Length: 261
Ligand SMILES: C[S@@+](CC[C@H](N)C(=O)[O-])C[C@H]1O[C@@H](n2cnc3c(N)ncnc32)[C@H](O)[C@@H]1O
Image 1 (tube, helix red, strand yellow):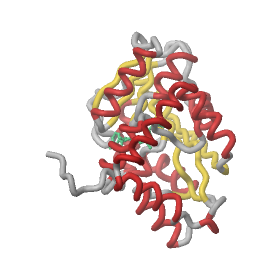
Image 2 (cartoon, protein in one colour; image 1 turned 135 degrees about the horizontal axis):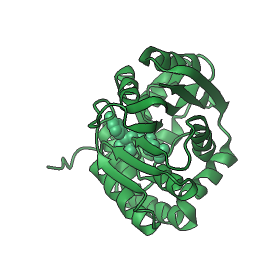
Image 3 (tube, helix red, strand yellow; image 1 turned 120 degrees about the vertical axis):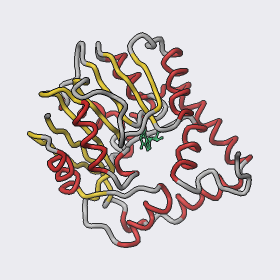
């Protein structure tokens, strides 16, 4: 039963339910990160791809439109999966994408079944990062690729910066070398690790590419409605924007990390 006293963003699940209700999920680096991931993972004609933590389905749908591949998107939340399915039908790609509920840390697939497994802005949200990456590798076929794109500290973070990201968006961000080591420890080979600064215009452009003008307008309307109706959502958004430690602007970036099985 819904606890009426609980803020919708009070825990990690509540935070993601909140994003699902707005109809928008994202990862830093947006389409630039996705394009690099696709290239480094050699995703192309006929590839069978698993997108773990697919959110509202933007990446699987983009891949189905731009590449002649088959994509399975999975997410821990049923609400994300429902939105992804609806969106795939709206975009007319339901024959090339499929969605289901599953946990990244215990994938319900046999060994060696995908050509590439990707996860965008997912591993940053849980402690069992190695367990999850080992799962991505297990279900990837020999010679296939595992690729992740994640928030990345470009400089060693201050305690305030670590606290801000953990408190506001539940993110346990790593430095580039730590992400690389994670892939190495999982047993992946030929690792590529590229870290970048955030490019604000590219982030906005990528969001329009992923959701289209109509999609963005819909998200803006939903956000406005939520802000007006839900005091706890209003408090959350105020906290995220007002407590941002401005002196760390530029310390946070994103990285694209890929290895071969
Ligand atoms: C920041 S969003 C990114 C979504 C998507 N990859 C994108 O770029 O738009 C993270 C997503 O991971 C999902 N998630 C969180 N923990 C998960 C887990 N253990 N297994 C699968 N999905 C998970 C959340 O529900 C959410 O949809």
